[in-house]
Image (cartoon, rainbow over all chains, first blue to last red; front, side, top):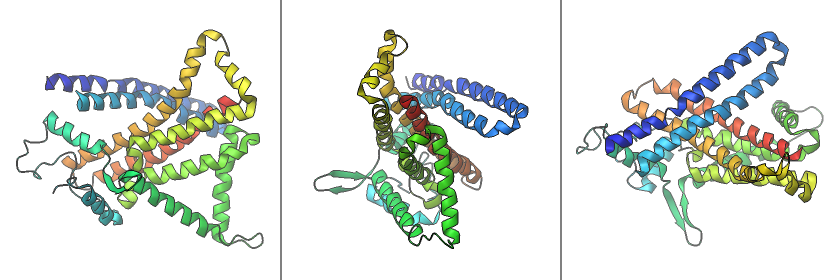
Amino acid sequence: MEALIAIGAGVAVLTGIGAGVGIGIATGKATEAIARQPEAEGKIFKNLILGCALAEATAIYGFIIGLLIILLL
Amino acid sequence: MEWFGDPDEVFSENKKSQSGVRPQACILCRKGASPSGKGGSNTGDLTERLMEELNCETVFTLPVLGGISESVVVTWIIMAVLVIASIILTRNLRVENPGKVQIALEAAIGWAQDFFEGIIGKENRKYVPYLITVILYLAAANTIAPLCGFKPPTKDLNVTAGLAIMSMFVIEFSGIRKNGLKHWVKHFAEPVPVVAPIMVLEIVIRPLSLCMRLFGNMLAGFVVLELLKCFVPLIIPIPVSFYFDIFDGLLQAYVFVFLTAIFMTEEME
């Protein structure tokens, strides 16, 4: 039973994949955009931070679910 | 070393380590601390420790209000420091021949005001002081662990939930104030009336996501740092602490306030 709980918590952490891919794509595109238009760096950076925060939220939810699985089951 | 036997003891321990040196005892891994320990790889042990970490200790009990938890006390300390700092910094303001401190202060406040006015618009500038206050509190709260040795209050779900509820009220209030109650009720059925339930749910989802993001980030940083301290107690945690406590803490403070401002703009348009 304990092993299953541990496996479940590990599966919950797989949400990190989505966040990683999302932030990677966002950063790549932002770098491209800055290379094309260096004068718009401030605006692009602001939007990048916003997008990263929203993408990161899924990983955080996965972490919280993993924590809940370990703690409550 | 029993790190969290008695809540009072824990708090005084934190107080003692104000100089920036955190106690060497590892919270999540008490290898060697308890002679009867079965080693650190037992899920049951880890569960117990995480549970103890998640509970906020009651520092002392007031007669009417009930238990006062550690995060509240740390919040009081941050409040006191911020209030005293603002009183001292704004004491001798002069129009002519300003001092160095005043020039730096004006530059910082001017930058923050310009930044938030850029997001929520010049005509809504009366909300800017609230946003600056929240970002100052969050920046102090998130980075207090490496700087002063207290546990960060944002690691407590209740604190972030309170901040998120404040954000929720400000977001909805700004919309009602700007466009009137009628428009606010109508905007739930804005593109098509079918989406109305989702739009109503959004009132709760936005602060819930704000709250969980801040709490999850701070707790994740804390847990990772504690686990790292079990394995490498020397030197290696320093740069990691810089990343998780200082960089991530400031970033999350920024993100929290930034998202609140974005939601307010959305509500006010």
